[in-house]
Image (tube, rainbow, N blue to C red):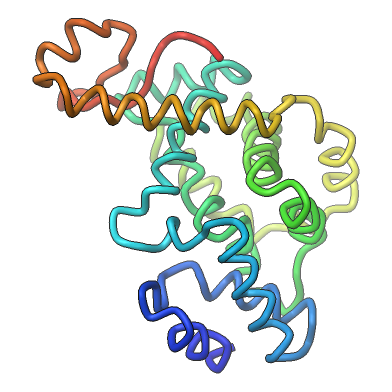
Length: 235
């Protein structure tokens, strides 16, 4: 796997190696059992899905999907979104490891990809980040009742511990994910809309003084430090 990552750093010096890329490379190597094929797939996957923007300075694509996830949670899992909002935290941050690694970080400590990852990643290659957002919603929906009794740190700990359990390798969980895959209706048009919405917000914030910006657009949600972490209106 080191050879795969070293080759990528040479081919794309603007990105080189970033934390999380090792999980993606590892999953592809486990899948194809050949370094050259795994490297080719890594290169094309990063290029096709614009993952350079997930890894470069300021991680613009990660910020976009954190925003999108915060919006989707507000619509589809409003109780969980509200529970996290009560602590002044953007609920999309919960999903950062899933976005950065395209769910491949759940490989951690395993000698082969868990069944859930195989199902999610197959859909990722055809549907792009719709698959990752849907998988994230599925996991959060599955554990919502438990998470509503936790604080933010406990929720993060719970999600971090999941790969060490058999949850992601349970055939029943995979079947349930496949059955619910279209439950949240995350279309390409919706993702494009959320991406444009996020870009518009960034542009508007540049053209206003921050105080005037917040007073004009009262739909924005702030954390305890006065930073904008979300919006209240629905998709």
